[in-house]
Amino acid sequence: MMASFDTLTFMQLAIQQAKLAFDALEVPVGLVTFTISCVIVEDGKVIASGRNRTTETRNATRHAEMEAIDVLLEQWQKNGLSISEVAEKFSNCSLYVTCEPCIMCASALSILGIKEVFYGCSNDKFGGCGSILPLHLSNTMPHNNEVPPRKGFKCAGGIMASEAVHLLRIFYEQGNPNAPKPHRPIARQA
Image (cartoon, rainbow, N blue to C red):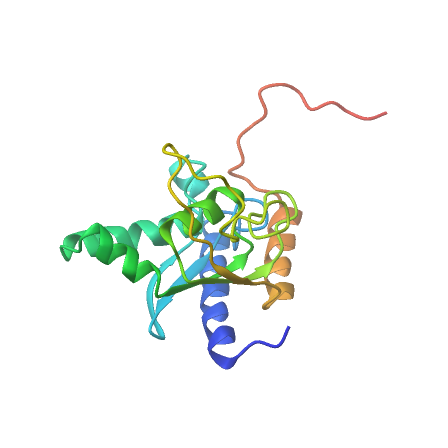
């Protein structure tokens, strides 16, 4: 995929966030299976960034996208923005993440009405932008009174994918010292 200079610049910032996650013994870019490191841009300016913090917080929902979204929501709330103003702000934002957003994150991004998502590598186990479910498309979930309406968003993957995969490979090859210990013994193959 041919990416613009801006797209590559913002994706490099997402890779840097992935490296911060790696240094903190979190899944880097975090998004291969868990999701990861991201940057949110509005009008060509970085307005939020995030990295995986699932191990650090012991909260499986603290993916990079959720961390960055929370930064924006807190900031916009402090600025006194209304719900409709927040929705308008999200509709002008682009998200750059090293790995395809998982189903949880892609669904949240769709409900929030983010404009577009650019990601590095695919998430073949939990991807919500087409690898498993196409949650970036607005017509993939029925609307009812209990489910917020989804707006859908543009999506482009494969940007700096080899760099994202490389970080993940290093992380998993060295093992995760902070991974929870299994409650039962691991079955050994004979």
